[in-house]
Length: 403
Length: 64
Image (cartoon, rainbow over all chains, first blue to last red; front, side, top):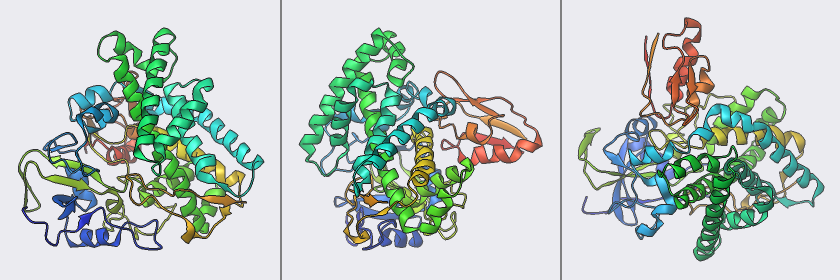
C-alpha cells in the first residue's frame, strides 16, 4: 500500500436528490468485493463492504478502536491530540480498560431500567408536542422538537435537575450544532464538563437513582475520579443527544416522503408495529454514515488478502444495512419487514451502549408525534432542505413543518 | 436445546431479554447477561434463536 492511485477517497458523496441513500460509489464497491481499498485524507485503508464480513471482523481482537494510535484512520486530518482523550473516553479504548469503564455505566441501560423510564420519556414527548401545537406554524421540527426531545431524555438519564436544564440545554445545543465554529462548540463542551463535575459533587452528597449517582460508589472506592465521572457524562451526552435528535428529524422526513409507510405507523397502536418501524428506520437511515473506524494491530489474512498491522480498516454500516444478501429490496423503506438484524448500533465490544434507550425513545416519539399531529407535512420543498453530508452523524439541518 | 453465554464479552445491550425474557435476564449492577434457564422448553426455541441472532456481542451459543 504505497500508492493511492485509483483508490477512491472516503467518505463519498450521496447522489443529488437521494438524501436517504448511501453514496452510489459505496454501493458499487460493495458489489465489487468484500474487502476494498479507499483513501482517508490520501492514506489508503481497507474497507469491509458487506454485512457478514463486518459482523465477523468488528469483534476481532486483532483490530483496535484506539484513535490515539499512530496512523489511525480518524475522522479529522490531524490526529486527535492526547488532551482530547478524556472527552472521547472508553469509546476509543480497547478491552480490558474499555470494558472496565463501560461496565461502570451499563446498569442504567438494562432493559428493565429503560422500560421504567418509558413513562417519563412519554411525558417529555407529550409536553413538547403540546408546545408545538400551541406555537406558531410553520416551525422547525429540529429545534422545536427533535433537539429538546433528545436532550431531555439524556437529562433524565444523567439526573440533571430541572432548574439547571435551560443552561444545560443551551450549551448542549451548541455542542451538537455542527454548523457553529469549532471554537464555540469546544467552549460549550468545557462549560458542560465543569457543570457535570459540580453535579457529580452534588450527587456524592445527595445520591438519586440516576446514572451519575450510580458512579459515586466507584468514586468512593477510588476506581474513578470525580472528573472522570463528569467526563463519562459529557461522553454520554454527546453520544446520545445529537444521534437521537438527528434520527427523529430525519425519520420524520423519510416518513413524510413515504406517506403509505407513515400511514401504517399512524394507524397502528400495536407496540410491535412501532418497534418494527423503529428497527427499519434505524436500518434504512443509518445516520452513523462515516464508518466505524478501526486499525489492524496484528497481521492476518482475510478473504485472500493480507491485512497488515498499522493499516486502517473501515466498517461502513450504511451499506452493510443495504446488503441485498441480508435485506431484500434493501433500498425500499418497508416498516413491515423484520429489520432487527441491522448493524446500525454496530457489533462487538463497542456496540452502542445506549441502544435500549434509543429504541424506547424512538418508539415513544414515533407512536405519538404522527398520531397527535396527523396532518403534519413539510413546509418547504424537499430540494430546499440541507443535509449533514460532512459530519459523522447524518441528518437534516432544519426541517420546517406545518399542519 | 442447550444455551451457553459468554459474560466476559457481553455488552449489556439487553437484546436477549427483549427477545426471550423467560430465558435471559441482566445483572442489576452492570446489565451483563444472566442465563435463567440453560435448557429451555421447545416452545421458547424461536425466541432463543432470535436472541442469539440479535446479540450485538455475538455471545449466545445454541447447542441444538
